[in-house]
Length: 142
Image 1: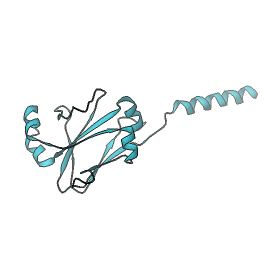
Image 2: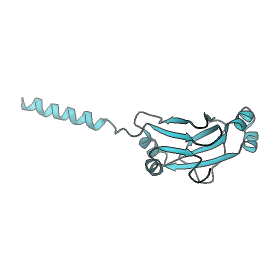
Image 3: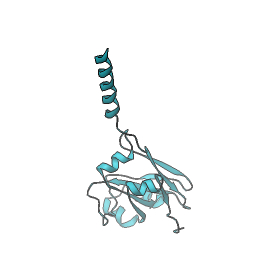
Image 4: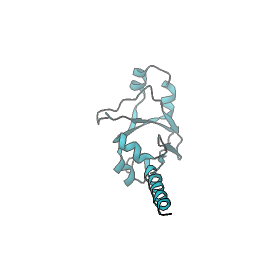
């Protein structure tokens, strides 16, 4: 009986320690501007402050004016685990109409004619402080 209790406690201990803690599953991008936008999310361990280039291989996601978009974590453990692998993430905001006009053009053409309206470079601390929400345009830039 005593051995069964010990084995049961060991089993429970293994089960609870094997489950990673879940964190926030979504980042919400809110478009409070008067125009439809697209955003490009970029996660890379080697991201630097100088990296503001549109990446042609990644694509962009639309967000209509006055609406929001949920950006999902890459796995079931949530955004904290993602930020443990990649300390910063970049979100580039562009005008949807201009982007759609050039989206099938060569990368150099897109970079030349589709301006970046705003660049967000966020860390885990930034997202926790902002309650996992990115707002475009930022406060004071209306």
